[in-house]
Image (cartoon, rainbow, N blue to C red; front, side, top):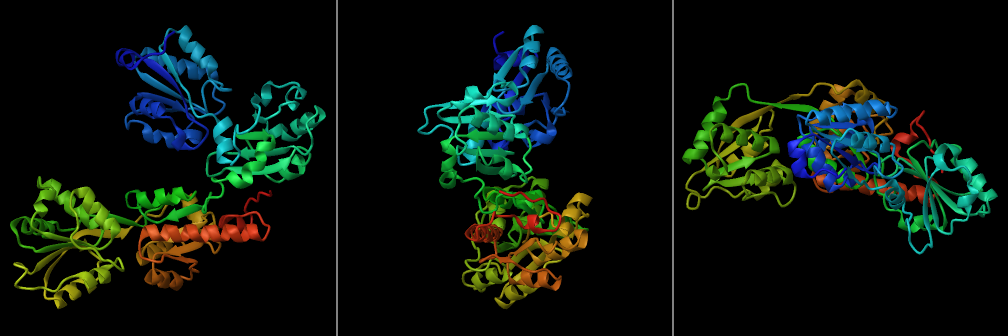
Length: 529
């Protein structure tokens, strides 16, 4: 049967068998992401590939199947949905045509006269090796891939002159190594075993065929894993790039909402970390909206010379009021706009407003005051400043502006209240040392996190945005390990990455295997190289 094209999908049901790739969600193909975005039904193992659900429509039906789901029941479900005229995506491990278990499902679609398409995925055979720093096929005469479940005689593969990649063999790794040696492979042949490849749980043991048993004994290797045999393994020391990231595998607590921490979390992921956002405050509208209503009216009618934004939340509150009144960024025409820091400035730019004034030094109210011009009746036709802020904002900015000759309308744009406690597993991880680091971006995040979840464990690295936050952390009995060199979330993440890199280098220099902070707590699972 011919694979269905897009016009066929619009007329009738259709099944796409999409390769999910080797584990890293960013290795999904563009075609796979496009099909997921248009699917009515997605059949997938949520535990293994749940991160890919972000490509799906909000109204898409997700059918969660376990790893040992009955093949015929999955086939029946996909066929039934397609027969009902729906577009179905069946997410498959790796590449659907590469040692895949879905061949029978594809055949069932063909037999039932259901249109289908097979979308290749990035296969573990190349991706996992690349992420482990082992070139799949560079200057070798042969690149051979086998499925251990289908091999009866390993002597056939002992003569491989290049790189031998073995799927589904980790539980029999030692017998396989002995069989290859018995077949004529030198016991000094380099071998690497990588589990959870291309994910932040990736772990690689490098050995030789003769020593593989002792070296794997305490490693705790489980599937999915690959065994790589050959001289290419020796290049890992020079080409390893993924497992050597400064925060590789670190579980980092970010006490902010997903909206606030998006850029920060992306930066942490680039360092190899696994960020986990835990909101410590909840932003709510002011109890009496009339004050904001009058401020927006004054802003439009020319009451103000300046509008000063001290947070992204303030920008969001004003933007929502604008939308409520049918206004947009053009209402800022003729006004001067100030932003207290980079995150606030980004929110304004997304709104369509470019700030006229930002601190060049410390990104704080004090830094903004240092740059703010005094009122000059010859230059400034209006001497009034609008400050839309939180209900708990400090008075220092208002006092400083008044000293400079300005009059201020300090308006409550939003309220901040302590967030609800996070789920029990998160609280237990915080107090029990399950997190490797926590980033504190303000004194309030320290107070609120401790209030809703308890104090972080003493093995957890405490990173703070500046001296005031450090002082608050110390007041709560926390040891401060990292401080940003300037008060920005980006600088804080970079400082933590530098700390992680130095820690890793120190361990290697001492001849030790680098370990994450959470792995040093009592009872933590240890992996031995």
